[in-house]
Image (cartoon, rainbow, N blue to C red; front, side):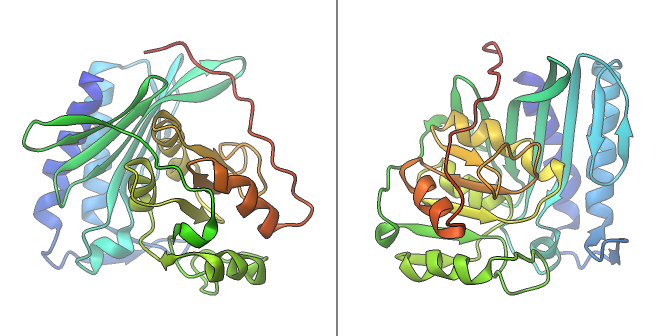
Amino acid sequence: MPFMHELIALAFTTIRPFFLSGAAVLTKGDASPVTLADRDAEAAMRRLIEQRYPKHAIVGEEHGVKNGRDYRWVLDPIDGTRAFITNCFLFGTLIALERWERGTYRPVLGAIGHAAVGVAIIGHQRGTTLYANDGSARRVQVRRCERLEDATVLATSHWTLHEQPAANTALIEKIVKRAKLYRTWGDCFGYFALATGTADLMLDPRLGYWDVAAIVPVVEGAGGVVTSWSGGDPLAEPSLIASAGPLHAIALSLLSAKTEYRRPSRQRSAPI
């Protein structure tokens, strides 16, 4: 936990000078944007990890894979680069710590940090806590919502756009039309809102692994439920449906009449 705080602080310090500065934007091979803030923040975090834990593995969106053993750090320095380059405050940093268990890595610690406002939530099996730049900390929890008609539903982008194409667009529309409020306040902020009890359902039909690894312990630590788009393990099928619980079966049944919701049985890690 103390080292996670160091990584968050380092990411914030690296990113802030670039925000609102008109940083140059490059286009990656997958047509997504990237800036020097993304690359410098990840490089800085990788250096700190390698100094402190030289045997740990690292997976980063911008600088690739470093092999290691026992533990692995998963880094997304700026989740929501499109928000970042348009001076929107909803971008964030995703950091996960995974442990090697039974032939695979599983996340045991996750963080969502928002450099623009100086807040972060860190989640693990014992709970999820919100930390602010004034030194305060408080435990956060998802809010209970049992009807879509009462729900705030969030998504990273509108389902008809090319950014996150989904095959079942007509089925997604069924969810949105029944919701009390629908907004594209997405990327990692959508999961921040869910975990802090101000949204009820977050939908992402296609993601990278570095988008998912930190989200799982954050949402589950806050008492929420995360699955892939099909209802399975989001780490094995990088996509996400996240909720406080009661809406999960409703969302999955609307997304596919063939989907039967079963809460994923993942091997839980020992408390940190």
